[in-house]
Length: 147
Figure 1 (cartoon, rainbow, N blue to C red):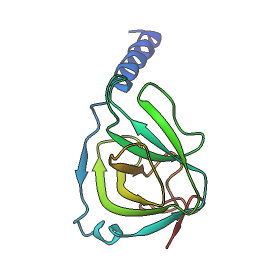
Figure 2 (cartoon, rainbow, N blue to C red; figure 1 turned 180 degrees about the vertical axis):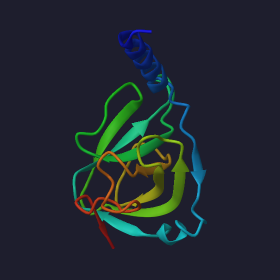
Figure 3 (spheres, one colour; figure 1 turned 180 degrees about the horizontal axis):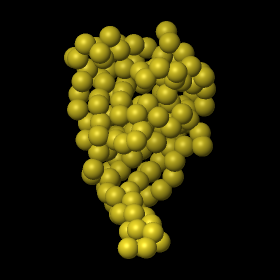
Figure 4 (cartoon, one colour; figure 1 turned 90 degrees about the vertical axis):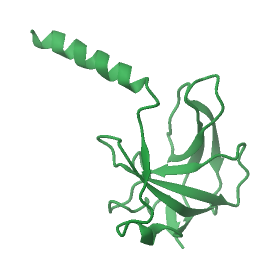
């Protein structure tokens, strides 16, 4: 098979997988030794971070929010984005391991204090896309200051 045909097949497979929002799974690893010390950790937002309401389909309700620095994300799965003010407190309440690849597979379930968001849904911070710090379990110190 010519390499151009392989490229077309690979591109088609990638596009079809990117349209599937049901593929990601999260496993709660909060009680495992490697992660339990993170639960209860508090951070203060000191950089520009937005909360994005995420839905699986355009006609469905928001399932969860993710926190991301700008420029952020766009697309039909984003129901809204709300800027979070500096000083907002973020507390890690759960640690998840996901099947994401090639990005870091760790996600924090967090609680926010000092903000009014449009929905009462779970809030997550994925450790990629600008949220990651120097270590594999660190938040970006330019955005989040440990308290």
